[in-house]
Length: 292
Ligand code: NDP
Image (cartoon, rainbow, N blue to C red; front, side, top):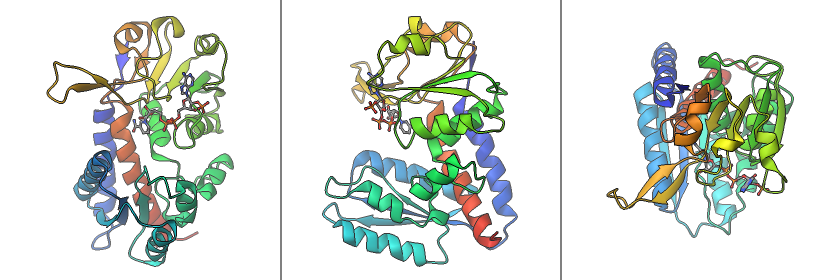
């Protein structure tokens, strides 16, 4: 079994991006973060993203809006950023308040600045295998881990547990593409899939993205499979100061010995999500500077 160290691979990506940004001279990419309300997890995610941006030499802006903001006002703010030639990437931090339809917001971020890859235009381009598309960051991070570890996907069976628009669907779509990594046979499973274990046992590469703590048990994994655990779940733990610890969607201790490669939680897919956001921002800047 080999552990896929997401921190190490994310650091390598960040270092490479710093080199690319240094070559831009005084012109720097700029990403704008829009945070609505004071949700502690959102505050912490956006801080982390801003710190990573600064490390690379990417400028960032933070727009904090009140929880009570209407959908229309939020759209106006997004539009201003769409029109601002000094902003190359826009990220509207989820979750948004219940009275705001996040699909409407994401679809109104200019596709050229949609570094989160949630816009319908980018999801469509992803299906068209258009290299200019922005793939959403977590699935892009999964693919980068697979690529950098030299894990073969061509002709292999990838089973994705979860069909969300931000993780499951695009992860399968990326590995279905003609390319490397890619050319996989992809199966999706979700909450309505009966006998899910029959599918997971067929996986050469099993991607777990369902948000259920330690759902994937030893008997669900084929010996020698690669297991990518996307889940981030808090479970109570009295031995921790915080009162909880983070676990993935995979029962790591029991499953790991059966695998050829596995990502830990934390320290697997998580760090890659931020790294790929930065990669998308640099790509947005490059496409802005050299259109076509
Ligand atoms: P969603 O809740 O949007 O989607 C969960 C998916 O899992 C749905 O398709 C759902 O099926 C399916 N599902 C839920 N329960 C079961 C079950 N018992 N059996 C089979 N399928 C099931 O979650 P996300 O995709 O946003 O996130 C998934 C996990 O990944 C979460 O733990 C989240 O915290 C984590 N995450 C981690 C990131 C990172 O950076 N590492 C980034 C983003 C998310 P159905 O569609 O039928 O409801």
